[in-house]
Amino acid sequence: MLTVNSINCGIVIDHITAGNGIKIFEKLKLDEVNFPVVLLINVPSSKLGKKDIIKIENKIDVDITMLGLIDPEITVNIIENDKIVKKMNTVIPKEVQGLFKCKNPRCVSNFDEYVTPKFRLVKANGKIHYRCNYCEELTSYSI
Image 1 (tube, one colour):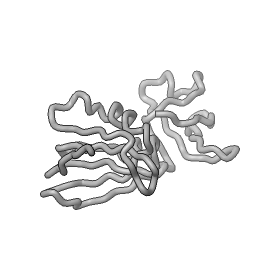
Image 2: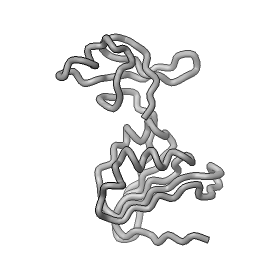
Image 3: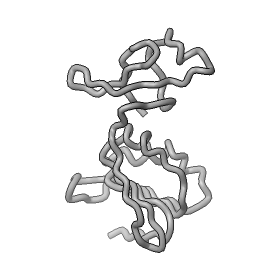
């Protein structure tokens, strides 16, 4: 059995759908940090069957919106003095700004450096998409 010690002060990103842990690890650029980080993959879970977990032995800014786009079931735990002091759940955000590009190559957000891509959540054909605020194009999110 693998044993991973608890962290004294930092962040635990839990309930990550198995396989999404590496995406989050890369998006947060955790391979570039100089403090302890643990990525656990395919950990047994009674709720999910298997899950991934990321433990970060340091306080860093975590973009909850971006995490919600990758996996809306994630739980982010803030740890201080070996105890959870704050627990946050992610959701699929209703509005997104600057996290991905519009798929319409003629959209102003793709060629004007002063325009930040902005999207609002819509459901179309039973799937989740984002509609561009500038050109109305539907864009599937993929992070």
